[in-house]
Length: 489
Image (cartoon, rainbow, N blue to C red; front, side, top):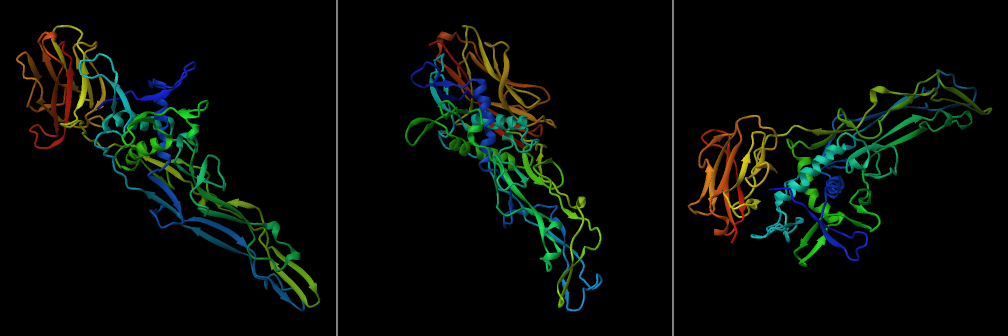
């Protein structure tokens, strides 16, 4: 498990043909930022209107109140009195249309040969220069793109913003039937705010239609920016600076498109956004969180007087009707807002990487003919370091962890040699087959004291186990970690 440097195709100024390059830090950050686009193509938490999917979002109904005219009266001898004329009345519409859908999601397992993941450069045994292509492993992909992508989304304000590019794929309330950089999830309004249209009622119109209102429709929309809105898009070339991968079907190296990248990365993001305790679990509510979009308001006129109105048609037709009057006022008790919520709490999980057939690899290239010592260090804060006597400092971050958050309890670790040379001048340790408390950093190393010119390149695979008890009766996870060192033959 490691962070890899992906490859992409670029055509620098002055170059006739495109070339394959390793991405620099800026390009990689742009790909991480593009995770928001990938997730937005198929979010695992979404809102629907007036369907049978998911569950009704709690806190409904959206309540709309408004006044309508009373029924009109007509007499042949005189106008009906105010008391004889039907009063205006208040109508109430309750809208229970908003549904929350959480799609099921599982962490992708990947393909057998990891062909679907981006490729990077590596050196074969005995080479000092990275000149060969290799597809990332599933854990490489998570370390290189998934975890940094989630962290970039957090840094960009995915859960703390409104309707910008950084919130692509999130839902919001809008009063527009054609919101910019967004798409309606349904043409059916979430709710309607009807307010009596006082000016529509006239004496000459008696009998007036009882309900005459000015309506404001509230819709649910999804932030939906195009792929060209992200930095990975090269506007001059009309291409996207996305990683290369090996197409096993055609046996060609291809560059990802926004669609293929979203299809690859999106399911990983959906898993974390859907999983309670992942630290990224996302939902919506009508009670708390970060507001998304417009505030739903119920406005109605406050009656001033009876609205009693007369109309003389002829000696046999005297008409009366009472109309809504007054000015529109917000009914604060019926105000509602949509919020996006995130459960930032993380379920503490021990997770080691590597299998017997595909252990996590650490390459070491000695620069001297003396002893070579290389290996791994498991730290108390959950991180894992590489160790190499040929480097300065000897320990440096491997980019991987053995637990997903700062440990809240004492764990125990045990190392065993799974495979490696049995030469007499090669030793393993310092401690094998013994449970050690992770109250201090624990190290597993291999030391080769042979002259470098006397052996070819070697490797040692260590089996690593972590348990919750000192006797190892409850082993939480097992992983395999390979350390490779180069000889001089």
